[in-house]
Length: 303
Image 1 (cartoon, rainbow, N blue to C red):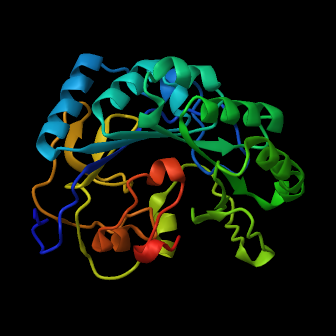
Image 2: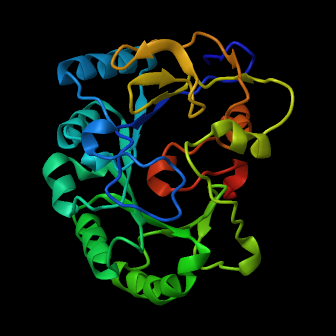
């Protein structure tokens, strides 16, 4: 068994979260991230041969890799189709978080093997009709993609959601998970359990997104050793390699140049996930977390 250097089992596969772009073509009122003016402002263009070399090297070093693509809206990247095709051919599993604005045909044309791709489809009620969203989900489901759906339970749209969600569920059927994304802290759970008391609404964040302002409410305690950087890396939309979504560079590399840590690192305390430390300590993060939209504890409980 390979150990992480602090007595804990090292994960068998490397998890890579790649933010393709900061741009999103929707303007959701509940989104707290800074607005990017155009697709070209929010991303880098890549030499795909260099990307292929980097992914191949990571797979050679770790044996297995799982890549999750996100954004912004990742399908707005000018090379999105080529990147999807390349990543899905080189990784053991690939997943993407998307609003499906590119349509189902985009994925069908880009991914020759649907079973290798998991899609987490985000229903944004301000920007898309329930009919169009349902149609795309059904077409992808029938084409063989693993697909789940999420929505943000934002109080201002609760009445409209109560009207549209039953229609979508009836259309897509019971075999497609539909999960509620609770506004503010990111936890997700089945949408059948809706209660007023479970909703937390923070003050609206004005101006530039400040991780420290949020982290102070999420995480406190003594510094811990973390395997992010060894078993998990993030590729930011500007190419920086971070050990996790903390926005702190791992070694100062810019993708597709990448190095992995050889031993656990001291967490800088800027983790944007309330449960990141527990997840790494448990060593039980779900390999399909990006596709399913859920994180699982030991024993299968959802958090």
